Image: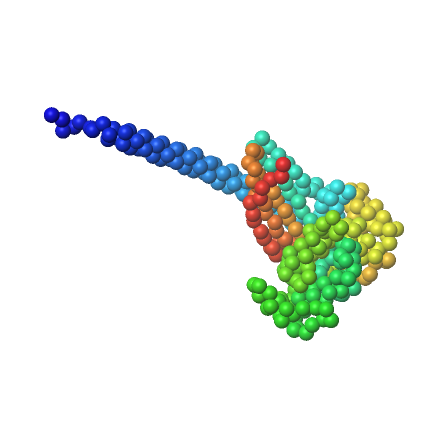
Length: 318
């Protein structure tokens, strides 16, 4: 007589398979839980590291702003041969890289007044920029006309330009802005303007370092690059004379050379791009803050206005 609890021989294999299946499922659940725990711990650790890096970046930003506000004479701002910005002859720059055992920080300040403002540049000046960058000659006039149409207030076409009828035919459609550009990246929305024109390629110089949308259109001779001066048609003897005054002993030029167009140049700056990069040691990601600020003379010192602000997490090189 068979016991109530006995198992038929042909069912023993099924029971074994079911037992193994249960063990496999339990193992999967355990591994999943373990992975989730590790992933959660890693996410928490990354969030903690990014938070530290963010506040380090904000600290660097405040240091850069404080430096710009500490200008004593508002007469001359200049850069030295290494690209460090001096707001006074005897003021030590805050730009550059620094590191501790736990973190790394880089502060970069660029004078937007050292570039050609494409919101104020007329057709011939825009063409100089495009030609200097190495844009194909047969494309230059069309790009100039399209930029002019993008920023002017009317709906009339320049000879080779584009207005709403072109942009609304795109997918997705949009309209011509018909006012000044807010950033140089906005050029990528203009008909015919390619990314390599802005960021450079094998045959084209990057325009990104030559142009701006901030400021009143005048250029600081104490911070402008040789590239921009050459692009504007400035003679090499005048360029050399300007650069010889960018030393700690002289403290930058205080007068505009007579060879330069009146009203187009100045010796002091008001709009600055601040770029802060911060990361914790061993972390592959960094926090980057990019801001454009406008320094406005006030009764006592300066007021600071934020014109542009961007925060992002980016992968570190290397």
